[in-house]
Image (tube, rainbow, N blue to C red; front, side, top):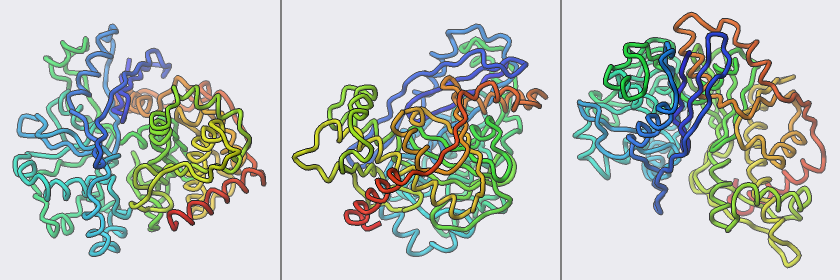
Length: 474
């Protein structure tokens, strides 16, 4: 068997595949990061370790032959020489560092976009390092290395905390074309070179499972652990979005649109990252499931089911009510940090049902806005999209996208977690397995739909854009 572990923002997930690529174990555990009043998004990295212990101890895993890893991108964990974290991990959703973003934009806008493939935003590891250099210089001074989420777990498993090209490209410190740290920028920003991990390919072996860890996890010692990849690249690899013109559209806590390309495409509205092999562009939305969960808690809905049931009682367009989902700085296509959220256009004739539907439609419109941008940049004629993520299963989000997009869309089984599945596929690959993983994937397709744009939905989307323009000037 082959084990894939994904370190998500709010859940830890495992997939275990057998020799034929069949999913034999799927499990997850909820984790709760700290979201603070000043934009903090942090977690104790050992919470990931505890969660992995809790998940794996349930099963007899003596037949696991290799482990693959994936994890949320852009995170920052500072570790000492023994691999112990110096402070809590800072996650991608952390929105501190506004001054650092402004500084990078003012002085290094062109050079960062050209070499690192994206514009500065609060999400990137570079901004987090600069912010800590200002607010907690002692943490930087104490650090032996920095690492990313999956690499902290990989280090605990093997003792090797190095990273791979996909995660390195999501730090805003990699020369994406060359596949090397962008040392000229790093030196100018006075970030110590000694804390940078070495970079490897995703499918290289990171190391072998330590005996003391194997004993805790009910695994055999000395099995290989692959370096792995960022969660989106792992997911795309698992569902075989590895060739140009193929598209992975994921909607969960955030939303990501991944399209493999031959080489970098410089455009301020998108990101350029390394894929398992080659390159891909990404349209990234921060405010998807994250915004829905926030709205549920903030506006007093019991849970996602209640929100959806109320929303289904309101017509398309929510009777004019608009939800701007921008609780954190947004990326594709607006790339704007000074955004805000709210339910607007409420009148005496509106009710709780309209507010509920506006929340789900607002996220759908935000996600479609990113897709429209990617489509414009690449001019994809007949895209075939693999749609993933829990939020994509919501009936209102799904219905909105099917009536806004023009594409062939495959929906995969809800039981498939694409990132941990991709990590498990990587584990099998280093053992010479899964040459025909596409045959396994075909059995996981639960629906294929031909999305066709309808004027009614397009008008509501345009209304959303008009409200956003008036309030946010974007």
